[in-house]
Amino acid sequence: MIGQQIIQLHEVDSTNNYAAKLLSEGKLAHGTVILAEHQTAGRGQRGRNWQSVGSKQFTGSYFLKTDFLSVDHLCYLNMGIALAVRGMIQSFTRKNVTIKWPNDIFIDNQKIAGILIETNWKNGRVEGAIIGIGINLSPVQSVVYATSLEEISGKSPDVLDVLDVLTENMNKFYQYVRQSDFDYLKSTYESFLWKKDEEIILEERQNPVPFTGIIRGVDLIGNLLVEKEGVITIYHNQELNFEANYASEKLKM
Image (tube, rainbow, N blue to C red; front, side, top):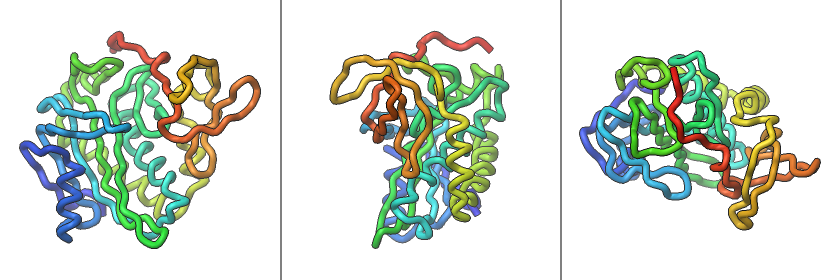
């Protein structure tokens, strides 16, 4: 069961790093959650920093055993985790909560949460996954293109209340991954994709010339499908820049 063991820390460089150290020492059980009040060297996608500001952010890591999962099916773990975090945030608001591919959580055009999954593989299987989750609880003025649970709900959320709902969702979607219910995960994930079926401005990171494209979904290994001048193009993680579509203004409740 996910969430039966919780390790709470005042300050740590990164909850993912802390989890990795425990795992290397054989001291990390499946379902363990590590929470930190302050994270001084948190990491996000493309090596970006995610530094927590006390109670303004939820910063934590889950460790999940995934030895039943092949490397080819790793994307479904990502889908399940993204859906779990999205569902938790949706419980705080009537606004439409979406997943910006591959695993950022957005409300309208503003980011509210990010996910970093680090895995260890053995003989073509994904032995385990350390899942770092950062959620903006209260406004963080230094972060552009962002909103928070407080702003969308009008209430100051408690970290442990957030943890309870998040863990409930993690257990739910982990079971879909474990049961290989990949069709359900893929269709549900696609139904919540940010900007799906809308014309948006994109840039390829290797060729930063803006173009108009339409997100149509993902393929069977989690790559993004973008319609570009009537042709579907497949993009891997980190190959596209979406920032022209972000919004820096704060949302109204």
